[in-house]
Every structure is written in C-alpha cells, then in structure tokens.
Amino acid sequence: MESNREAAAAVVSEFQIPGRLVDIKVNTQGHINSTFISTFEDEDGRKRKYTHQRINQNVFKKPEEVMENILLVTKHIEEKVFSCPDKERRCLHVVPAKDGRPWHVDPEGGYWRTYGFIEDVNTYDTIPSLEAARNLGRGIGTFQKQLSDFDGAQLNITIPRFHDMGMRYGQLDEAIKADPKGRVALVKEELDFLMANKERGCRIWDAFESGKLPNRVTHNDTKINNVLFDPVTDEAVCVIDLDTIMPGTILFDTGDMIRTACNTGAEDEKDLSLISFNRDMYKALIGGYMEIAKDFLTADEGELIKESGRVITQIMAVRFLTDYIAGDTYYHTAYEDHNLVRTRTQLALIHSMDEQWDLY
Ligand code: ADP
Ligand code: GN1
Ligand code: MG
Image (cartoon, rainbow, N blue to C red; front, side):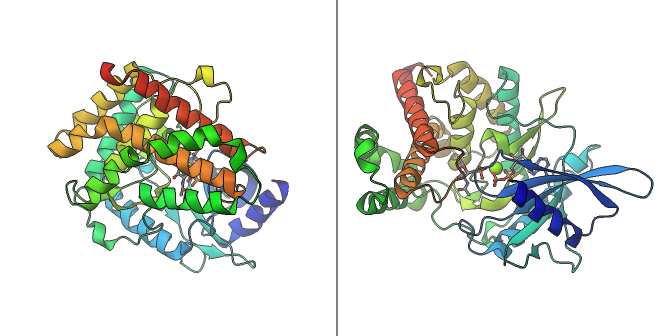
C-alpha cells in the first residue's frame, strides 16, 4: 500500500488544486478502485481534502466513458440540489486535471480522477440504527427521483449486462471449467444451492428484458458504504461511487440497499451465526424508500421489491464465488479466502430471508 500511496502523491499535483500537499492516506472501503484522501493547505493556511482514485481498468475498460457519465450525472444532480444550504456535500464534484480533462493518465497508462472530499459525513459498512435504515431508503429514493428526468440514453454502458443473472451464471460456469486453483472441489455445497436457485434468480432480469419493468437510470451499486450520512442526524446526504450508472431497473438498487442494510453482520463476516436478515431494518428501509418512490414506482416494480433483495444477494454470491474459483482477479481481497467468506455470508443471508419469507 505504501508504494500505491507514493504513486498517488505523485499524481495529485496534476490536478487543479491550489496549495501544497500536506497529507495523503489510503481508503480501503471499496472493492474496485484504489482510493486516496489527500489534504492540501493553501497560502492562508486553510486546509481542504480531496479524494483521488486510480480507476480499475481491469473492471472499467473505457475509463473516459465512465468519466463522461459521471460528469453528466453530477451536473444534473448539482442543479437539483442547487438551493440546499449544504449543496457542496449533496453531490460529488469532479476536480479537473491541469489540462482541463476530468482525468490524468500516469506514465504507466493508469487513469486517475479527483473529487472534492465530502467532509462532515459518516460511512458505514453495516447499518447502525433503524433511523439510519429509514434514511438510507429515503436517500436512494431521492437519488432515483433526482435522475427521473435524466435521459438515460446519453449514458455509456460502463459494464455491459452488469446485473444479467444468466450472464453471471455463464461466467461462473467458465470459472468452474477452468478451475485454475483447484477450488471447485471446496465449494460443492455453495454451488449446489446456487444452481438450484438459478431460475428464480433470473426473474428480475427477465422481467426487465421483457419490458415489464420500466427502463430507468440506475446506480447499480447502492451498497451502504456508497452512501454518505450526516454524523448528527444520520440523514443520507450523498450517493457516491457513480461508476456503474447505467440504464436498468431500479430494482437493482432496491436490491443492493436491502442486501447491505438488512444484514445483521458485515459482508465478509466469518462467523455465520452473526448473519441474519433483520425484518425491522427492512421495514424501516422500505418505509423510508416508499416515502419518496411512491410517486414514481409502477405496481410491477413495487411487487418485486422484496424479491429484489434476494436476487441481488444471490448475484453477489455468484460473482464472489466466480472470483474465488477464478483465483481472485476481480475484487480487492485482504486474505486468501476472502471471496469465499463473502460468498458464504451472502448465502447465509438468503437462508435467513427464506426462513422469514412469509413474515415480512
Ligand atoms: P470503489 O469503487 O472502489 O468502491 P468508491 O468510489 O466507493 O470506490 O470510494 C471508496 C470509499 O471512499 C467510499 O466507500 C467512501 O468511504 C470514500 N469516498 C469516496 N469518494 C468520497 C468523497 N468524495 N468524499 C468522501 N468520501 C469518499
Ligand atoms: C463492488 O466498488 P464497490 O466496492 O462499491 C462492485 C459491486 C458489488 C460490491 C460488493 C464495479 O462495489 O458490484 O456489489 O463490490 N462494483 C463493481 O460489495 O463491480
Ligand atoms: Mg464503492
């Protein structure tokens, strides 16, 4: 990580940031990009923080297109929050490079971007309270509403068929065939469950493809640590990590907020006895979400919200297991079996949902 930090320190001067760099730290919360938080001090001694990210080009093959999307979407949201007294923390702000482009390419061909760091906020990996769950629901609903008049046809497809369950099972099948680390033999139980649930898991994608569900602008990665909360009121003030904004069904977003906010444990909790589906959190989360989304949701969307939590948890299990079998080439991992632990957590969460299915 030290060499990464040095690489980041070397590129920050390529962006339009006044003052001198006085500190730079690594943030390890995301699984995809490499994230650094810097502090700059200007001539008057005022300090400002920034977020710098090396875009993961194994995941995002066309970083320029990712940035085009982000500029369009943040411009749209900026207009929506213009009259808020705290508008600076209600939307990501891209800081251009010295040549005016929204990225800088380092000597190795790595794409870097900079955002203003949003201060006075909390990020959570697990939800701390019912009120925070209600606020998360409101925050995701508000984000969807802000983008309801944005023309999704303008957006580049940054990862094709991102939530296509059938395609994800195809990737799992390929990994099983290649089995480069001999791990397939270790995951028979997990594979049996996933194979038995394939058809059910495809329901939302199929309904979207058939046109039954409206095509809307979708964030596609609404897990809890991609949302910033006010430290005093726990209001969800900003939805970040806009790399996967694409046209889709908003059930992808309800699904990921359910997956991450209603789990009593962390996404990578090793002790599965700590993992269960919390119905009270679900009620608070969906209650908050519906306060906003009732104005635009169709009946078909509403009926599938509960299912979306199960489907998105399942697609994560498929993706984590695929990466485990393929030898950990996609997600950042901190230890040998990290992707297997993540897979098992997702499956434990689905079992807990199923046990309580008629009760929520
Ligand atoms: P990844 O795609 O790897 O998940 P993210 O864009 O989600 O990367 O950033 C990783 C983490 O960095 C976030 O979970 C959040 O904690 C923090 N972060 C990113 N951008 C900002 C920002 N502008 N202000 C405050 N925190 C940020
Ligand atoms: C990744 O980038 P991050 O950590 O917010 C992944 C999501 C998964 C998530 C699981 C581009 O999100 O799809 O839901 O991990 N992002 C990408 O924690 O694949
Ligand atoms: Mg993230």
